[in-house]
Image (cartoon, rainbow, N blue to C red):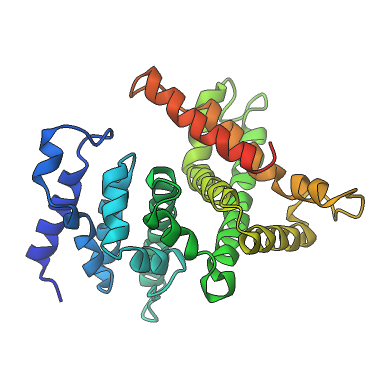
Length: 288
């Protein structure tokens, strides 16, 4: 088991690997690729798990080299364990401790989603790391696809609740009267939209693989969700498989379109356009 001191060194090393979002420059060559996976060694320790995955999230964001190194270092197992909610325990001692455990579990879940979205965004399709990433959604009878749609449904419901509250608050006399769309969008991001956007990116990337099993399992789970009242109809009028696909994936495309529209230019217009085009490709893969 890693000591707390060792954990701190590992976290610093992983962060240093991708200090800049573009992952270029001589400084990047000074840190061994294996450093990015060291925080995963602490996933088994409840007190360190969240800190470890936070560090991984930051290290992998917009950094293709770190993402490839993470997959090569066998980090997928730990990332997907967090994604599936494994190892999350709630305390039976008090409601306060149960609440703290639930908050840590939610934060870990959201970071795991962000990590996997970064991997899909930065690992080159057609490479062995990309094939290994895609294979995770096939193994165990597509259990990761089931979990992906489960999380999509949960966060979509959270965001819908925030939007409903906003509609009430922007009315005359409401707390958000006069708020502009940018302010409302930022509030929705904090209310679950940020994670919902990452889930949409994962859904799009997984669907874009063209793997028949992944695609059909995704559609099946989305249809089951729609049947529970979270969709836009039962689809009895679908004229073709393509129409069914378009209907079921429309909510995902809508989220991705909003995401693309709100990608800023803080890292320059060229990077803004690159990220937007990446999202547009996902929209196209989903039938947009």
